[in-house]
Length: 530
Image: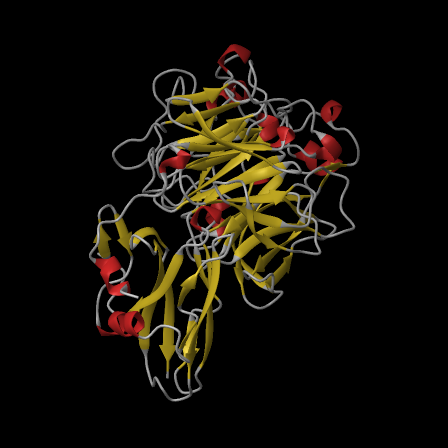
C-alpha cells in the first residue's frame, strides 16, 4: 500500500455532511450518575469512563489525556452539590489519584479546574457558627439554623495516589464588608468597597447556610486569575492567583497589589449598592470562565445565565482592562461592560446547571441540563448540532483530542510497552489509520492543504512510515472500527534505547481508495530515559 503518497496528495477537509459543526468529541458527565462519556458529532457514545462513585459536578480532561472528575463521598452534608473528593482517571478507568477534602469543618462541592501545571482548583464550603457570623457583621435576623457555609478555593498538588498538598487558598470570609453593626468586624460603607463582599447580601443564606453557592471555578493562565461563579450573589468574581496564601487572606500584595480582594465582579451591582434590579444581568448563572487563548473571543468572559428574563441565556463580555491588564472601574457606579458583546437566547431553559464553551470554529457549545440537551450554535445563533442525553448534564466540554497514550515515559534500559488508543469518532468509521513518530518536534508539522499532521519528517518518521505492524510497532496501521477506534502498541526491548530521547507520536486517518487524509490526531509525547 503506497502510504507514503498520503504525504504528498491534496487533503480533503472533514466531511461537509456536518455543515458548520466543529469536528471533534464532546465530554459529558451524568449529573448524579456514575459515568463520563465522549460523544462524537454523529451522537454516538465512543468512550465511557466507568466509576463506582456518583458525580455531582465538574469534570475536566487534562493535557495528558487523564480525566479529572469530582465525586460524592458519603456521608454528605445536607447541601445541594456536595462532593467531598476528586479523582484522576486513566483512559481505561484506572484511578490514578483519589483525593478527599471532606471533614466536619470543610467539604468540596460542584466544580474542579485543572491548571497548566497539573494542580487542581477545588471550591469548598467552610463551617462558620452563628457566633462567627455575628462577629463578622451578619445580621442575626438573617441567620437560619446553626451554621453558615461561605466558600473558599484551594489549589491542590498531587503528592501520591491519595494525597495532595494545598499550595494556595482563598477564602471569601477574609474579604467582607458590612454596614449593619459598627460594633462587629468588617464595618464600613458597602458602596465604597466594591472589592469586598457584603456579608448581609443576600438576606437568605441559602440551603443549610450555603451563602455563596459557588458553582464554577476557572483559571486564566494569561493573567493568573481565578474566576468563580457565586450563584446566590448572581455575580462572577475574579481574584488574583499571583499571591501567597497569606497575601490572599489580606488586602495588599500579590501581582495586582490588592491581596485577595476582588479584582472584578459583574452581573449584579445591587450586591455592592451600585445599581438596582434593573441593572442586574446575571440570574443564577453557571459555567463562568475566560475563553482560552487560540479560540475566537480569547480573553472574553463566557457565562451561562440560567434564569434570565426570557429564558436561559449565554452571555459573552469583554472585561474592562487597561494596558497593564488591570481591571478598570470606569466613572459611574458599577463595573462594566454595560452590556455583553454577544448573547444567545431562545429555545432552551434550565433553572439549574448548564454551561457554554467556545469552539475552535467560532461556534459555541451549550448544554441545557434540565432538557438533557447539548447543542452547538454559530455566532449568528444558528443551531447546527444537537444531542439529547439520558440525564442532566452539569457541564459539557469540547474535546479535540483523538489519541491517548498509556504512558508518557519509559526506561530505555528496562524497555516496556506503550499502548496508543485512537478515538476518532464514528464519522471516521472504516477508514485507514497509520501511527507515525518524530524526534524533531511537532511544529511546523506536515501541512497538507489546510490540515497539519503534527510531526516533522526525520529518520524516525520514515522508520515508522516504512515499518508498520512489526513486533516493535504492533498494529500501527490498519482500519478503524465502527466507532472510529483503533489500538496500536510500541514495544521497546530492554537496552534498545539507552536514551534520553524525546519522541512525539500522531495518527493519520485517511480514506484508502483516494489516499486522502481526513483526520490528523493530536500529538502525544514519549520520553525515553536511561
